[in-house]
Image (cartoon, rainbow, N blue to C red):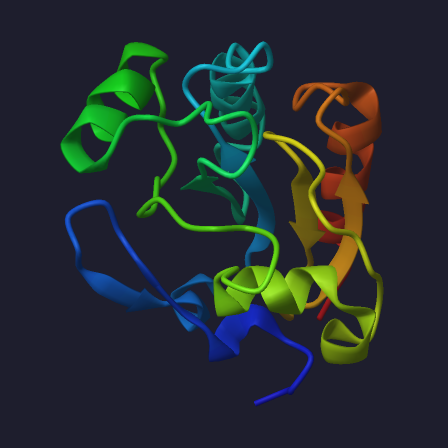
Length: 166
């Protein structure tokens, strides 16, 4: 397995079930740290729009709730699930994690550190920071929170990665 791929990491679903990110092999992924009490929270709905746009393609959104910014994710577990469902979330939502600093989840330490992922360094500065992953599990790009999920900028990059052959 490529040391620069995200497939080496395990993550926990909201119900506590552990899965390997290798379950998403050959898919283009958008990894987003989410929060329920943020001015960007309406992006949960836009993520639905984005997912629907690529519904027939090998595309998935992985949402990681985090309370690292402004205490904007006070919810836990089932409450997070219910909240995201109220926005029609049609993508997997994982257990609340830390996304920056010394206690950050290993996946996020990897995503943030160019030495580890071999491509880019980008630490989330707020909720709804987005990392784009290609079909081989390699980080290819990131978008700041103010870049809306359904923006043409993000859609074009996803389409390009989906069109690329492995």
